[in-house]
Image 1 (cartoon, one colour):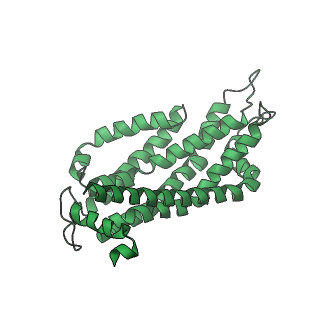
Image 2 (tube, helix red, strand yellow):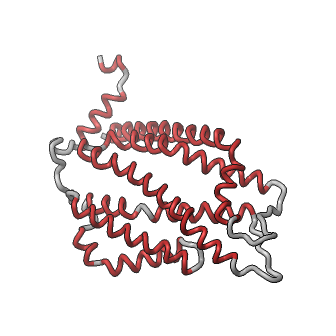
Image 3 (cartoon, helix red, strand yellow):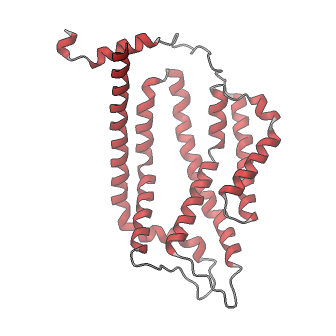
Length: 272
């Protein structure tokens, strides 16, 4: 049985390596496609700041390779975004064989919803939060104080908070998954709304730029997304831990799964 378990484990590792290699290759191809347009992409990302900078202010760089390295980082990020559908497919292809049919039907839409919410969170930050936050920060310049943001620092800031908003918008998916598998109950979440609001407030303070306006602009959608996730979770069937899987029959035993794994690792001669 130890040998069967080892073969199963090795098989999973080989499949995982294969899927990771495909995902990395997709990101690399996306990087190659993005690099020629890295300057244009940076101009788009810098637009919220450029629009609010006072006359005479502009972005600067303080070391010779800074702009080049910034473009490389930006191209990697853009390459990942372009390759995201392929990366998600590799993730799905790795876990799908271990899921029941009804679990696959429930999980697959959540992947697309997660991508939609993640992109929506980044767009929300780009179009609403960043202009207001940058205008607030730039308002402190004047007189002998001139705003001269550094290219690499600005990219790090906007990427960090774009990712933060994208992750914050995953709250409905998190709630649906946790209630679906029985870790949390809808009634418990309903009774704990005040604690949920407090957690959202703390998360908004940590994830948002260091000003009250940005915190509020993240806190409000975070809590609304909590309520949206709660709304949908209450209308979806929950599967508490230990509940038998419907339709597909009882779960297979570990011995049966390892026996199948042993047969899959046999050569054609051994099978004959």
